[in-house]
Length: 101
Image (cartoon, rainbow, N blue to C red; front, side, top):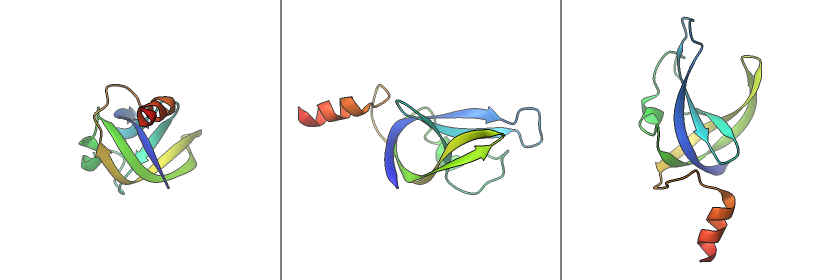
């Protein structure tokens, strides 16, 4: 389990199929993670994650490497998520510098 900081955004996946719908991602300074909060059908919204779209957040959860659609994807299973007020994608050296000052 770990804590990750980044921006939550939505990509529409499986376009043109019956299961077309939103996929929620967390963009950190070096990686993107597919977010999973609750079991849902692929074409349905996840209203909990939808609330945090286009916002910077802290996410606590577990990471798993899975193969989805023939690609290896890092999936972050969300335990909790909170909004942070940042104007940039948080980077480790910036966090360290802020703690020192």
